[in-house]
Image (tube, rainbow, N blue to C red; front, side, top):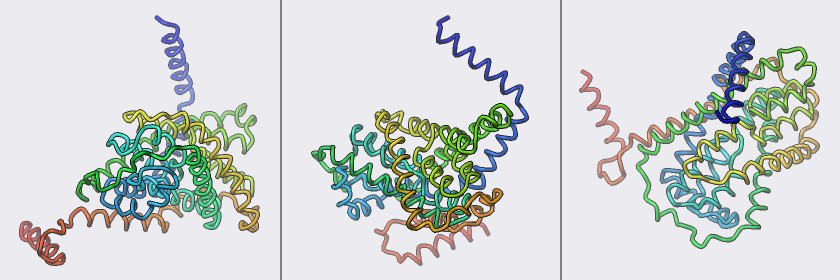
Length: 374
């Protein structure tokens, strides 16, 4: 028996004893984690993740490649990977990492450029920052937009800095050089990929909430951690629980702490990125280092935004967990449902090469289905 095996087994046995002795707190934390996933994380992230993967894989990527060609050239990335930039802005944490990994596996992107892109592409989505954090935690849509703006500008600063020290790729790989799958195949693949990413994220959230409940329910631990300490300790491991803990701090400091934690993303997101990029073998050290710069730049920018545009922020604090109700019927959720419906329609509409008018094709499909049922 090696020393490493002995220590691993000893730690596993000690963890088992701790969990058995704190079963009640563990169960309560897991219930909180499941509630958090069902009421906030999944409604806010899942549809946008699916849409982002669809954009990266479908013919929509060609459209964004042409639209964002100046940005791609400024950042010194292949123009056929412009869809990744859309996923970085709208998709949420794992979506862009998944798209980057797929681009490397398909030969559209080299590993070194993929590692660089990870540094500024793994971000919280606007539905999470604006809906879940801004409206749900701090009770202010304006705060949500300021959080998103600070994170977006922070990512752009990191991207510009990395591109300044990068060489221009020898080949920009025009998007037309790579065949695209049908819209139906891309829609199915994007939904499955988003479901896998959400499952991983929710699994980390649930286990983190369970452990945090054990830690902070103990008097000798809860007395040791002030609100700031609890927020940063939670956020270091899992971003969602850390951000929601910032609501109990409230005011200027709580908002800046939430922005820093959201940009750092936490150990759980880093592990998720490592999981989705395992097959492509993209180096992750630059990405891990960039998390600290991303958090610091976002915090500084957010402080400036709050001073000039935030108004009176001392009143903003968590409102007794109202974020569940806000997110269950939020505008981002409604928009995301419309996007998912659009993906479904794209998957069932036949190719353009058919001569029959679109309305007639849809009516004939409905008529055939109706007669088959009757």
